[in-house]
Length: 297
Image (cartoon, rainbow, N blue to C red):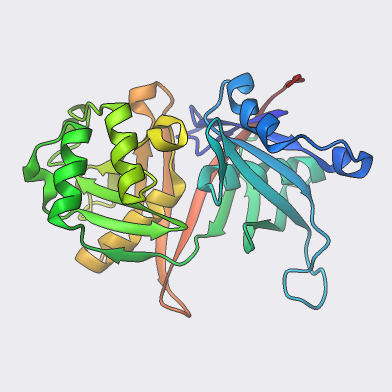
């Protein structure tokens, strides 16, 4: 496995993500089972693991105009249909494997093709990865949902103003706090929050500071239901927040700082643009290739 540090902040930190190249295993017919894949994040000491294999299917149904890989994402709880910072890690890994300082590559996951671009970053040891997030839908949470979720997060009911249920692959609660320093206040009960999220069919809760006026936001993501008590970087929730702040305040771009509570500073940039159909969000995160490790499951 290769450890890729995804969504660095000024060259530091990032979310360590295990990337496993299964190409040789595919050709040898000795693939890991899904149960074995589920153990890899724990072996790697990461929250998530990405499993890559070659995908010969063309992105446009006509010809392979660019390289393509198939990706699967796992936590210790099982497979995820998508993972934003895992996609950043996968694209950075593919560029490093190709020995390219700039690469356009497609990644197929859960039937959706993500087109990414990797370029050399400001630091010679990092790359900047950009890709388009999938379709995002937004709705207001119900009073019943908030009555269950806010106590499980350790937040007062007054934080309900401006909350949103955003769906990108899976739904999650976006909930604001009053100041950046107030992000230290959430003290979730992991078991209770996991049970509530399971009951409401939510991935987790993304607690964020104000920042629609400056474009700089701080956030924390709690997702114990999928085995991640707190995520260091959550790209898809950052994309959801960008869409929400555009709809609510007209904010076209945000830089989302995460990971400080875990001692791994991370930043995700989300830029909203008009497209077809509807609003599109482009995600950029810096990544650095780390250690290569061998493991036995």
